Length: 274
Image (cartoon, rainbow, N blue to C red; front, side, top):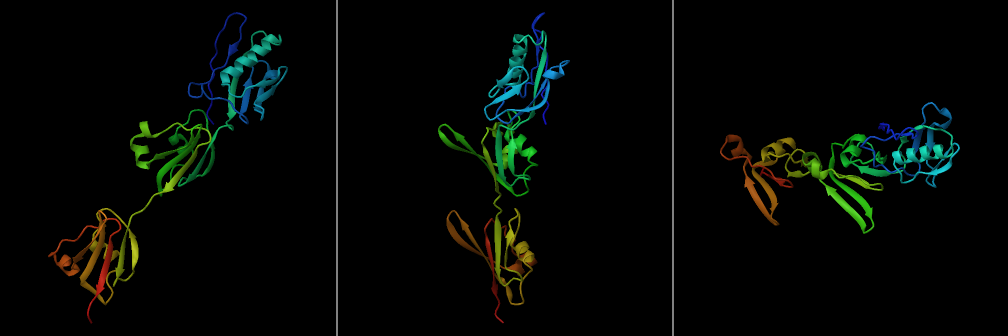
């Protein structure tokens, strides 16, 4: 839990001291279900270890009764309590500090390819990377990040590529708003397909730099009926399908250059005449 640091402002001989939060949480607005800690040093009867903000947005404080705190900062709540204690003539120079013990009013939901999914409570002005880190980080299969946000104008969808988040953090790491739904999609893995007279017909994960010969070996090599001279690559480029022919024997002998594969290429090994 982030600790809120408090400083003391001296307001004169008969004025009290007010606790201020650190700059990082100065603008955080207290909401329903947040849990506050109120300290009045030297006056334990006026200090509260933990008090939750009610659904009406208030807290019940000794002597002062119900105090509206929803929408206020910790500094504003401290000032409100300080002023009330002076007005009621309970204390002459009270030092009042307020800390948010539990953040429970503002949350985002994280789904998809992240270590820990579910609800995450915002602790002030948090950005996407802050929340992803607290959720344990992205999984190995993480792809595109989508943030769905409700606005007065309607639903807004923010799309961020994982690579951009890491390489252009200054521009691709947005501040989050309460109610945001963050969905990390599964990364689309490109494949190549090997069929025909090979030991195992199967799709293979595409790896940049992979060649036809390597793909055939990965599929277990040719069956006893496989023809090294009857290997074709079916490829779709710019909306047009093309067929490339090659001879594995020539590749083995260095007479023909092995062919680099592209994502979604289909390798078909023909049958030799027995």
